[in-house]
Amino acid sequence: ELQLVESGGGLAQPGGSLRLSCVGSGFIFNSQAMTWVRQAPGKGLEWVSSISGNDDNTVYADSVKGRFTISRDNSKNTLYLQMNSLRAEDTAVYYCTKPSWNYEGDWFDPWGQGTLVTVSS
Amino acid sequence: EIVLTQSPATLALSPGERATLSCGASQSVRARYLAWYQQKPGLAPRLLIYDASKRATGIPDRFSGSGSGTDFTLTISRLEPEDFAVYYCQQYSSSPVTFGGGTNVEIK
Image 1 (tube, helix red, strand yellow):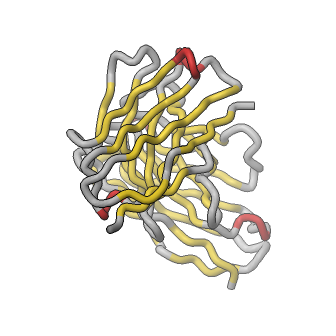
Image 2 (spheres, rainbow over the protein chains, first blue to last red):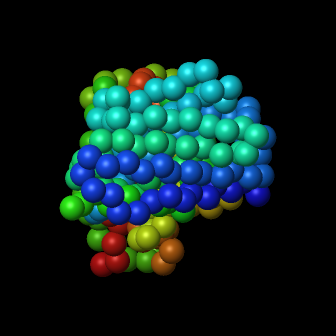
């Protein structure tokens, strides 16, 4: 069974940093593109960032470009999202998910359970 | 970027009724690259439909997708109690991928 499990969420101050992790199992992690999608409280879904399977290519939403960095450690089947210079508007549940194939745009399945990031002083 | 507009925002129906959800795109969605997701409170989204009309693994056949170009539809033929949830459409025709604002299907 394909499974994704996120961790690392919590409370951060404006301007602070957090690193999210997502461990994948049940599939060949190092050949698969991966993606982060977020959902602000009571709001819809927003694509954040994606990375190719071989780690050579990354893309970001304009809202996080220059502040967030997506990366992966294929030896640990783990995806990361380093979030710096956090703002109140980054408050959201962050989901790890797997594009069907294309890291630049595809449908997403499965999804992790999500991890809540709250940015507040 | 392609903006997706879902309507109605809320749909109040009874179990057993037919639900028709719409998703309109600001530009043509190439190759029918559109997906639908179901989300229940406190849970992650679940893929229902991809490529506009293909059901994901394990999705009951009461869920069907149709449409092309700028107009897409998700139909639930007969609502079951577990179908009351929020539904999102998503396009992957062009970067960045974008999601619609959602339709909340609630019990009447």
